[in-house]
Length: 133
Image (cartoon, rainbow, N blue to C red; front, side, top):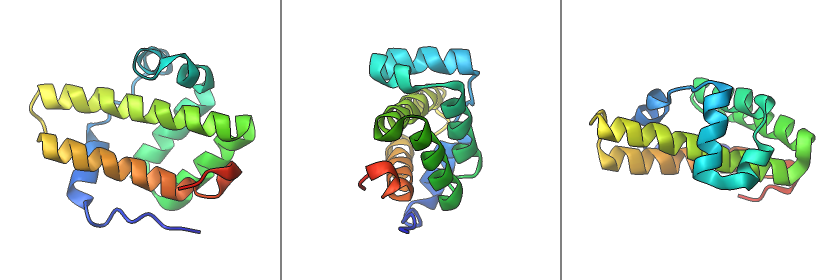
């Protein structure tokens, strides 16, 4: 199993994870539809919402992220995992934009932190239901 290589940007990753607003399921579903479209919204369920929260609350612990991918994959295979990945990116982007507007973080921190989130999830999901990092 591949482990996440996020050690090179720990400060920006923590900054990004700490800014996540943990919206309610209804609010998150609207954000996903608006930012990621119908495909991601169709795959976004309460279970997916909970798995995203668990991944972020664990600060992207590799085992928890992988377990979330496996649970999402069991619900709908690779298609569900892709939709939930896009939903995660949409939700994180929404939180980051709000933090940037409030000037709670720098653009560089947001950019490198968001990239670290994508890499960590993709690496943890590598091999789950045909997910390829």
